[in-house]
Image (cartoon, rainbow, N blue to C red):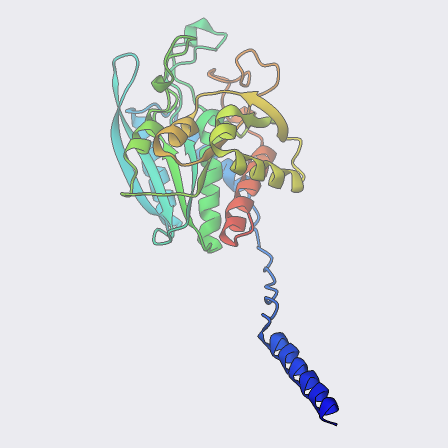
Length: 332
């Protein structure tokens, strides 16, 4: 009987140990169901109006009356949408030896939120039309409906969207000035261009400023654009580039956002990446087989409202809107 009692005692002790081990085992982590992020609709007619409004002032060459009038309108428009606006004035030293009074416009949404992204474009238009077929007009400034105004129009519409659809994310819309006043040529230095981006990258509007990433829009308004993957974006912000292009593909926009490498180019994002150290990609139209690498209307007087396509504005605006609202919900 003692033997049986000893066996029973061991069995009971073993059972208690097993039970205790089971009680101490960690319970499985609760499954957190992600809420579906609502992405507001992008209004192409509104964006088109904002492009047209900029063009209506005339060429926006830094230092001109037209440039000043357009600046005042944009600042007022951003403020009407609840943004905190900073006008970052600077002198742009042009390759001609001229000094242009210039201004970077920074429209901040949710400035107290630490997690931030940048949406940017340049708002000046070129002071000459060196690609124009009419030699009598090559020294005249261009309207820049696509080259400058299209990206700005998309961003002003996104500002309107944010004002009506609160977002849990810090968004800084930065309009760079004096981007398009450089000297062309194979041996000309890259820092002839993008003077506003260079100035901001060295003098950010907030001390110790940080942003998770940035998106630059340049020449996004003409019909059937080809947005390829440029080398600067790939090298400095490759993960962001892939995520944006994948998102565009999932949204059905593979006719515009193509999975093709388009090589190196100098644009505002280069200086933001290299000087400020903020990963920024470029959404820029680069048609295949183009002699200049850009559209036929590039740096000509043909860059007017006649070449602006509402669908192109909508697609770009909808993709960028999806990025920021998904980022706000930690789903980008």
